[in-house]
Length: 478
Image (cartoon, rainbow, N blue to C red; front, side, top):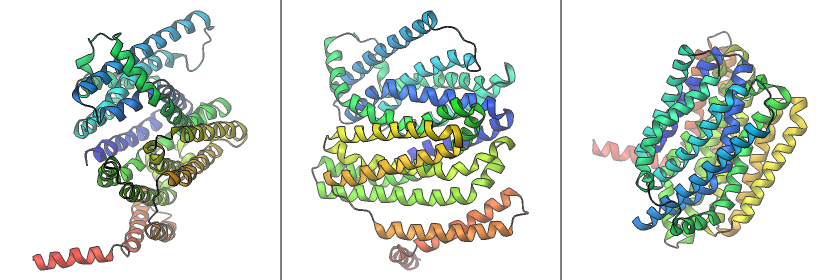
């Protein structure tokens, strides 16, 4: 429940932000912000995942003393990263020619955001490992509100420019960082001797797990972020802005599906594996993957049906032409979510190398294909290439991962979901074509109702026995 709020709330605020700023800025100005945000996100993943992944894994099962050691090692790792950032900035200032460009005003806030985000990401991972779901949700909502409110205030007080969006992100991170450090327990170890031998030894242990996992997370972040950078290089920040605005509207939607699925099944999966019950772990993993895929298919159908009207309602005029990328963006997110859980057998069996190498190979293929086709065909080519790469990796993780831990799809649920999605799309499209002269909001509501009715009606066939028993119990109770 708390994680659902922590995902859904920021997703709604992000959609509001996109609706506001695509009306305030042109595609070029908004595109600069989109490219810088994608670049910083990729850089944070590259620099910090080797530290975040072992922290999240080991802290969740650590004793009090072990947890303190992990937090000390985390401070040591953050200290090393901070030194590397300072050294990199000095080298840039001293040795790189100062060439003025449209991105020059973004350099200082981007560096600050990168550095602060490293600290916040580590603290957030520790918060999640400590099962502080309520605080995590509050933190994410405060962060999202602060970004939106800070952006509007800075634009009003200082300058009507998209660089204010990055500065607002910096300020929002500063607002939530102290609370995150306190709740994660990192604040208790900040003055511990950071160069103590035990901190180095623990950091070494963390890095043995973290560096292989870093490769996978950097690869997936490259899949999700590098497209906007390539588009900006070859097609200009305008097309990157159009693509990024439509991408942002869909960002977080898949989390609305995965959050309740994981809340209902994840503890049982981890408990089964922890108890050595391999068969039961496979059963629960199949339920997780099937639930995520089924919910994702419903979202893909909805995005394909409603994308044009969503864009008309929420985006500025110049950004609406990119609505066609919404279904592919959602499809890619769904494929990545399925792959994330299909990866669990690799992690359970400590067979990380095949997973990491496959992720890197797909990321390299994605970048190569983007470089080959984006210059000629634009952002739509990037959308389809990224979707295809996500699907290829999800198929690989599913096929190879099942050799390590047997699990099965609930094909009946998947088939009925597809039937519901297809029938809902057809009925919704017919209704929306009839309502072609109506306002976009009316078409959106009409199409959503028709689509939802078909999906619920067809999928209820699977659960008819459960629904009948619930109805009987209610009648008997009354």
